[in-house]
Image (cartoon, rainbow, N blue to C red; front, side):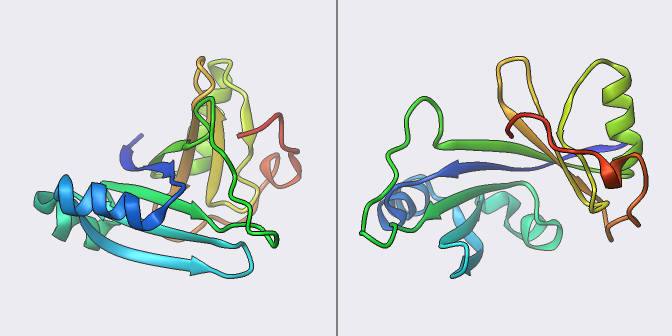
Length: 153
C-alpha cells in the first residue's frame, strides 16, 4: 500500500500576520487559497520554494493555514491546548483497504470513509490524522457507508 504525505493544517488567529511570518519571513510561497462563506473560513496553502511546482501539481507537500472567521459578534476563537494544530494528512491508494488494515491493528477509525474519499483516526497522543483517497473517490461501500463517527477528530 502507498502512503503519501499531503499537508499539515494549522489554525491561525490573524491571517495577515501569519502570511507575513510564513511567506515574508520564512520564505514559503502561497500555492492556492479557498474562502468558504457558508463555513466562515479561509484556507491558504503554502509550500517551500523548492516544492512549489510539485505542490501545485500534486497538492503536496503543503502547509495549510486555516483562518476561522470571527462569529456574528466579532469574537474570534482563542486557541489553546493545541487546538491551533489541526491534523496531518496522507493520500492512500485505496482508502477502504487502508482503513481496514488500521482497524485490523486495533486502531479506531473516528470518521469512517463513508464517502469513499476521506477518513480520520488519531495517534496515541490524540493527533488527528486524515486519509484522502488518491484520485477519484471510491463508490460508497459497506461497512463504511453505514458506520458512525466515533469520538472526535
